[in-house]
Length: 447
Ligand SMILES: Nc1ncnc2c1ncn2[C@@H]1O[C@H](COP(=O)(O)OP(=O)(O)OP(=O)(O)O)[C@@H](O)[C@H]1O
Image 1 (cartoon, protein in one colour):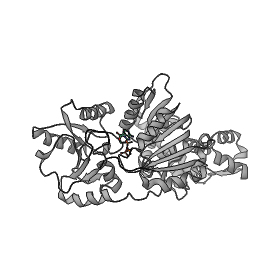
Image 2 (cartoon, helix red, strand yellow):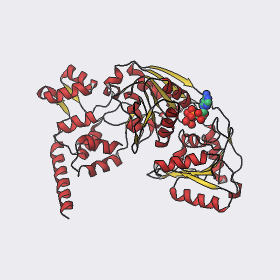
Image 3 (spheres, protein in one colour):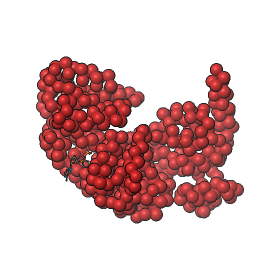
Image 4 (tube, protein in one colour):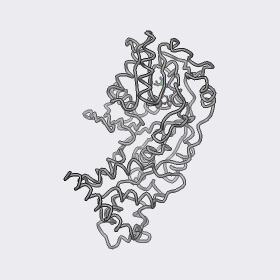
């Protein structure tokens, strides 16, 4: 009770404090009166530095030039290679070859499982490689390479070679900003970016003011992918190498039981909230010809980049709950998931795709034929430096009011959108109850 009362008192104090701070809108600063902030700015942000030198003022909420947030990267003229094409076209393979041959480097991917796959590949090729994700940290002595989930990208270390995989996720409303941060901030001589061709014009526009040299390489699919004219029909038609895709844990286990009841197959399961070791084990057992688990039931967690021995993808539905509402899968999502079938070099050189319900066949076929819609904007979120300066301007370490106010005032160029911060604001309200520094609060919110 006492703890709750203290927390409530603190929250009330925090909002009263925030209100008094924000009654007058003081986000245009004159730095001459604050040498401490001046030195912080000089060390952190070229844009602020330039505006300060021009006029003695800056607007902290001006996010129109995010490429200037990363002075280390801007000191380099990076050679950027955009590897774009359909799934299973060898984009990541070619980029990884460069990473393996480099003296230092980093792979930044969208999934823990993918980061693990790359770390294993490099270590197997005698290139020592750390694995760093939000949940795991496996450091290898003497390693000059790391494989990380994109949120863990280190924009302060210098690399010879860096990879950002599945760059089309730059347009994702909740995670896109981490891809933008890696894209603008990685301090690497060579930067390889892999993904869907729908993102090319946006990346070219975003990188235009950086001085980077951008080369685009287009790829073709290495093995055929055949959309079937008929549905699965009966569960007795399930065969080795099939992967049934569905979008809730409940239906994953329901389908697994349904298939195993036929008595012909045992199923591995892969979905996002499985602990990483379990997920890796399930994927490995499905890939292992000696294992009895020869059918996979999975969520869209298998959709990106993973190399699994899948012969046929069977969509149990083409709708999913995306955290806000039930909606139809998008064209890129359908193509991405379907593209897992018939991976080049796997046991099944030709991939097939179908679904359980005949009602879904027309959408499946048309999606596989359509180009992905062009991605027009990239996610953006203020750096810690900006929020830290903003909080010091307002003299508070309460993260929620700072973030809320900053986002309200933020100014962006047309190539960017501000990340969906609903969840971050919820986390900010909780971490404001704890005795943490602003940096820890920031990390809690963005990872
Ligand atoms: N030149 C090659 N030699 C041997 N194997 C290759 C070659 N190119 C690609 N592969 C293999 O083909 C499979 C698909 O390649 P890769 O993962 O690079 O495709 P991708 O275009 O990045 O696909 P996605 O977009 O689905 O991630 C991988 O198993 C990869 O190792």
